[in-house]
Length: 400
Image (tube, rainbow, N blue to C red; front, side, top):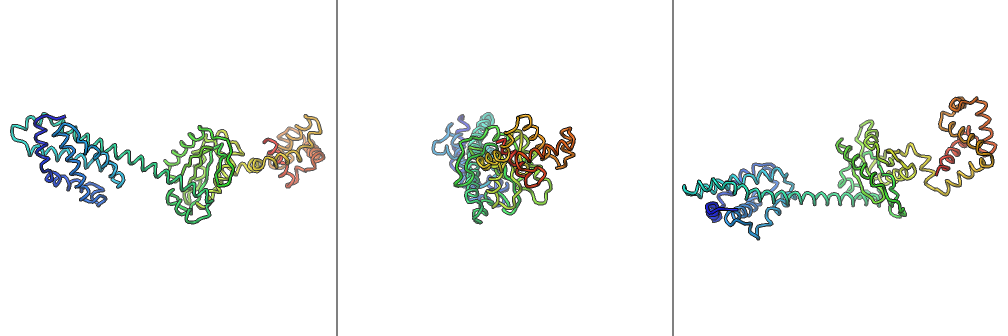
């Protein structure tokens, strides 16, 4: 990767290249964020001494010296860790070529210039090799820092759940790491199948979440992130959790979240006030996902109270269904289904007998006779609010 002219001139520059660095350093220190002292000039100079030596040795010897080989990537990693933007790092590195070229010309005799000009590509290639190492090290460091930040976010979110939001120090530190305002309003989302332990002491379930649900949730996260919402997605083997901070004084924010979740099978908690309530919200969203069995999109707890209550204790729900609806099985199937349909339609409507009669194309007296027969068999009057609530719960329990 060299010729005699370039090799000889590079060797001459190696004998004393502080002048080159003196010319290079002021231009670099004018680049942001070097200009505001993010990296001390002494450190920049020290790195340049090794970097220039590396490039000049490549030009002089035609190979990368083993002892200097790790420098480029190591420098890229350090600058990433110091917060220097990649474009600023590469802007500084591009000055290497200009300064080195001027240095080689300064060392050249008149007879050297034609050969140097013909071999200019070797200088650019040596500098580009150094720049490639810088980028490789920088990008590797950015990926590692991203993994570390994500690990830290996962750890603190898990601590928040495990602590159940009771420790103010944990809530404060979790908010700082997650980038949340601890006093803001939040909603929690849990994908269908998230039946594992969301809190210490909760027995795990053997169910596993549908991978497609996790993929669709990640797409929703991207959409919500593009809208500027603060959020955190927490992967779990049994279903993913998403927490979204709702903007202050932003009407319809929950609607925006639900629209982004279209097609995501998940349970959605009610809005909760403060980060300390997130563990509670997660449990509510998980209960909704388990009970409502969402298929085509998000299901709110607000729309699923009956399912959640009946699914919370399957044994009790089965007992309720058997005790309230069991007597209906003493009559024929046709009469039983007719009575059940009438009760379901009435409970789903506005409670007016006329509306129920219209929906079933019956006379209102027919509806009243069916209610009377239902009460005769079950002891429950669908027109009485308390009995109606028990009947509605029993009907929902019977579907589990």
